[in-house]
Length: 301
Image (cartoon, rainbow, N blue to C red):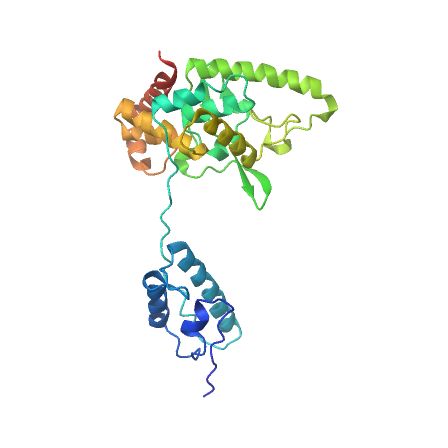
């Protein structure tokens, strides 16, 4: 029987632990012990590694063993069923209602001002607010329909109408002050479009976007975030992003209504789907009350 020595990939954590071991002998137990040592004793520097670093190491090792299996050097990949360590997401900081009001006070005349207001009052995801079209807004009824998203993949912006969860496709009632701001924004955008003339190219298949460049093109998230950071620093607030503003809206909705389902419905969370199906009428009313509560926290009655 031919024994093939495991040629570890050029990864400094893998070579000292597994380099030189025969492929045929390499088992799940060896790999599990290797990952455990990385989390406790650490790598070459002797410091315990983060879950993300261990996960990345496992990806490299798995790819090497997948290649060995394709070359018929091993009958099975011992990495195939190993669960990678979970990465605990660090939630972005959120603001109190008073801190949010301080931020809102800076937005008069700001290019992205209405975008920030809409995020703070509705808890829209970044992809949802950037992908919002005028056809998704009924300003007469004061309702926003979440139907499209805009995401950046490998540096390119892409539209999609498939929401993150089934409950992501939802309707949100808007505070009268937000409706007013959107109406004013619409007028400014139309004037901008007339001034641009043939330079206005629009968003193509993405539709007529509520928030766009001076040529009607989609906005890159990094530009929106850069200006947001500048305004936050100007106000002396804790730095956060659009997701932190979404969490702010979520907390206020829950604090004001004491209704977790209402807040979840407004945000488009998937967890309360079953309850929403059984109590559709009640949850629709709760969604309306949650949106009203967030608006009251910022603008009053």
